[in-house]
Amino acid sequence: MGTAPLLITQGDVCGIGPEIIARLWQREAPPDAVVVGDAGVMRRALAWCGHALPVAVLSAVDEPAPPHCLPVWEPPGLPTGLLDLPLGEIAASAGAAAAACIDAAVRAIQAGQGRALVTAPIHKEALHAAGSPYPGHTEMLQALAGGVPVRMMLANDELRTVLVTIHCSLREAIDRVTREAVLDTLRITHTALQRFGLAAPRIAVAGLNPHAGEGGLFGREEIDHIAPAIADARALGLDAQGPFAPDTVFMRARRGEFDVVVAMTHDHGLIPVKYLGVEQGVNVTLGLPFVRTSPDHGTAFDIAGTGRADPSSLAAALVMARRLSGPR
Image 1: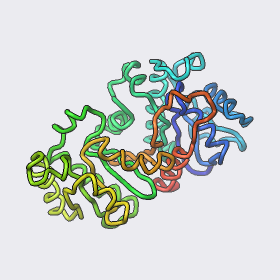
Image 2: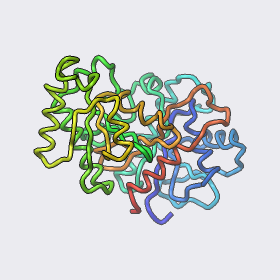
Image 3: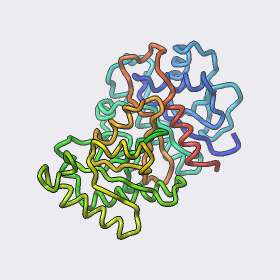
């Protein structure tokens, strides 16, 4: 490969993660990527796809892979018996395997053996069943990176959105919308988009309440927290505007008025992007000291093992990781 590889973690083995990886290799066989996972699981996924490509088990994650194969590095501590797990069901060992792959991949990147991380979908309940203290990828990666402040961005060719709050109840999310949290999100977003090539990112901020609170008639979060955070950001030189009504600001961004929308809660921000099509959507974790992307969908337990999973979003995530990381 010549440079450090892009590392793709296999995700939950009971879902479609291994299958979309196999289909990606069936479609394009990326020469600069290595799968971090279980070789037997990947052989089975290739068989589901009717693909005769051999699996090459690497002794080190950055070992040069032979041509015309799917290269797999099996990290230490990977649970055994993964092929015996029932597909489409939550399993603690599947969660443990997913966590082990993520942990090993991050450590490899930190050691200079990987260029960027692309994560196939994991199941949060399986992760919890395995004893992980993290509710999802984002929180786990944040911890592995030393607790740096991070934010989730979902992006496609038409729209980018960054979230102030992510994996918590809506009731709790409202309490987490503070002046400090919004300002941190604006800073992280501005810095990340500059690194991605936008010299002066135009950031729209969506309100939390209907009509962005309508002057306090429908809630005071915009007055007490969101607008002051925008003012703080502008004082720092950021091009942040709002708060705007959440039901219209995404259309304005899609038409080119803004480069990104900062949304207060998970579904506020993700529904507009996913509505445009999950096939090209990519999740990017902002604030990490390395590039991490993932597909814009979950484990799809209902179609696991059927050979029908679509690798398009994974392919888009790989392209994004390649573009954002550059060669090392």
